[in-house]
Length: 279
Ligand code: NAD
Image: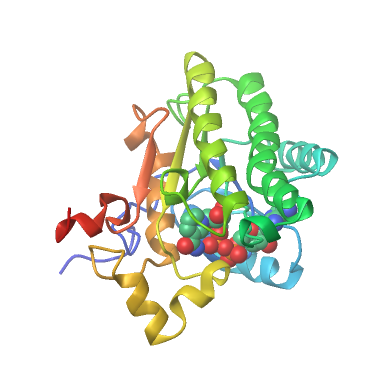
């Protein structure tokens, strides 16, 4: 019988990211947490960024250290330029470099359009879009400084932007969120075009419905879950590990030729399931 030692639960080799240094933002909850742990399991040293919730972040760090890699929790608000600069500088000082950025931190502040305040609009754009811009810019400076180290990776650096199916699917009552993710798509593609000649790979993951605190009301009751399942041809709500596995693969040299792509990890949510029986 094949041993599961040396493989992820999802079948990813445990040394896929060996020697690489990964920064995962918003890594003390949900998708970021699962991704940070999966990166550690795949052999990367990991910085677990958080804005609030130091205790949760420290628990994630402990989980990652159990794989025999280095992990530290760094507090920073991704929408604050000085804090992002301080975080990436500290990572370079303490870990030596940055090889992988997963720009994951995100939030919702939902309201119907005429009820939405400027503060709600601005906050979501600041965190979901400007936060990714700042983290990507600072990580890129380090990728360019260091260049390609062939023993570590074929690329000088990898950026994974956590987008959403709502970069494609309009979402009534969430105009700030949908606009932020639409912005992430064009930011990601533009950065991918600009940075590919420097051997920096920029890609995105667009999760569908994943069970995390951000969308608890959409899956926590059987009625809500049934409503949600109508939108998912594959017939199950996603788990954070579904996204973590995609992030590890995308960050690895297995996907070295994947540049400027959005990987939809959504159980088919973007396949217009209503058209299976209508239209
Ligand atoms: P979550 O609420 O569990 O996690 C979000 C994380 O971002 C938390 O750790 C939070 O503290 C952090 N964060 C928020 N503001 C921050 C800031 N200013 N600075 C640093 N960190 C900050 O939700 P999640 O579902 O894990 O969301 C992670 C990402 O996945 C988000 O970008 C979200 O838009 C995206 N996403 C989630 C789903 C889903 O169904 N859960 C679907 C599509 C996209």
